[in-house]
Image (tube, rainbow, N blue to C red; front, side):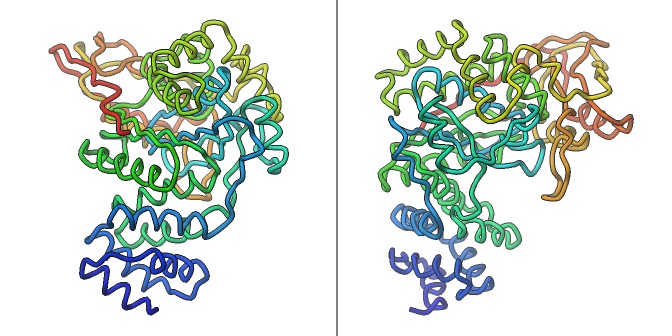
Length: 433
């Protein structure tokens, strides 16, 4: 089998067999297929696409390129959640303890962030003492005992995907739906999930900015899941404005605590209840969405979800007292209001720009080597559709330096105000099963 023949076959619109895809992925992982040939293959896939069978075979070839996690020692159906990313996306911090509180085991592998704010682990590490450096045996025991644990992603998980993603990033082939879908699904499957709930974002702050692209990606991932024996469902959600109010690591932890207490932002709460309902049904804890939602709402009202969060934090070395005393979280030196320059209604909040503003304050990483300031960020006081008076605070900017003018300008650039009333966008815009 020659790589050049496979490149030519795909270039001309042919369908690669399972053995051919396995040959390509094994060869690229072990270094026998060079970057320039895999670049040509990625470009051929970018233009020619892949059949559903090819996408499933590519996913499983990447799964088997490294180690896989065996979660069979954990009782119950293990349901994983994946979000395609956005601004202020605090769902995992709320969702994991919420569904664990009603009996859905959560064995979560998470990563650090590169971009607007930190990833789930960065956010959790704003809680003093919290750590994810635990071995697999301890990880499994924590999930069996408490229903929830979070561990860092293994370097040996889907190494082919890591290598291929780095190549796509510098060859103009990132926006290939078959390659995106197989990348996401390979990590979820290698992580040991029995079932997968996908939160596919669409809008200004999303990777897939057009609804049609988000629908295509969701359908592609759900199809891969079903072909390889994983129950999979996708929820399409709006990211035309930031999710919730907080953008920034410790600020998002505080917002997650508020949400588990029942006093969080409406949109974040609604998304977590929607995703959590699907997780509960897939796990067999509830038979209908309505039943599952009722269980989740009860867990918030009776305090069991918040208590589960405390138990989770303490089990991984975190200071659980931050739940009742959020002032113990990292706090920025300066809190600067961003007053509205005109009266009217908030017509738009450019989510991606707001994320950039938070990164300018130090909330995210511009490069892998960047250090995150866990205390800084932005808290919105107005969302799309809200009325506002001139001089009223649109947001508060949290900074540890007085050099925040660029971030302030970016916030003003991001928020549009108009005289006429505005309807807020729908949060849940579709589902794919």
